[in-house]
Length: 423
Ligand SMILES: *Cc1c(COP(=O)(O)O)cnc(C)c1O
Image (tube, rainbow, N blue to C red):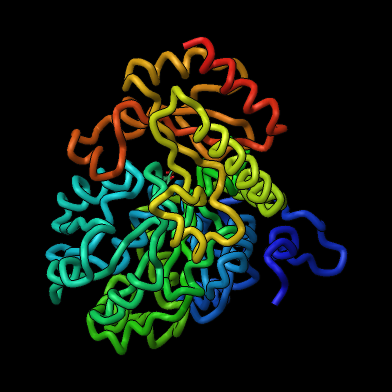
């Protein structure tokens, strides 16, 4: 197997003799066939091929192969956003009356979807915290619990997920572990190597890298045995909506992704467009080198902030002072991405003033971009959360989330320094 830096530029689109070297943008919803017979075979899933771009498209397929290779999975499905990837990843295996376990320290948009939107469908998210014992978490699992969902590096609390521990916990109950690996990316963290079953991404973040398009991905390790579990009839019994296909029987290790594609993408349709897939594909070319620089710059910024008297606390998993340090050393050997959060002394108001005093660093509702940017979670991304949900997600009112970019570190620190001097 090739190394990950190589996969970033080599995996995916493989041109045949005389074909374009770079993944083409196939801006077509439709595909042409020589005979009616042939298209029938593709519809029956007997042969590979594209029928309609809601289900698959060659440009999107190139990206799917690339993301799949990076995570070391067996199959991937790309979606129009990270949110739709998260949604489909759970909805693919949970129906009305089911429940699932989710960690509180996940992206605010995911909390909202899990609590509110899933509830409307009769699916209950049961929240747990990393501080709980295995026994306390397992007490929430019953025979209708369908998965455990966590975030590799939590946005924005920056908790590092103990993949090995929670994979073992999930597997004791014959349910899969789903990890949102958005912040760490496959460059910095390898959830499958520690027992995670499914990985989801908001590709909108580091994979794009330049804040151009939204996109999401679901990657399956192929390791979870749906049939042996006995808890997933939708995977192991005939799908009436697809003339009796049995996903585990007919698609083996690709059962989960095939079901998500031919059933949920078909019915719900949160597709990634070919143009966006192309942009993300090219973004990934530089992912490995960018992640190294993001991580290195963030480490230096975290150390600078630690020495600042106007800063109350700094949260960066790879600081020795962090309560996440041991987990970070285990799971994030190559770095902890560009995100550093810190609490400005003086609470919400001082934090706002600090942000306004920045010159180069932009205030944006985004993270994980090549350009250093800053955000105040309590008043933006996590605005819909109650104070208790904010605290559960590890967010204090004076906390700002800095997304350290790939500029020269001297310019980043100079900007932070002049802003501290002015408040
Ligand atoms: C941004 C984000 C999402 C949502 O992704 P979109 O592409 O914005 O829909 C999900 N999970 C995490 C960890 C994120 O940072």
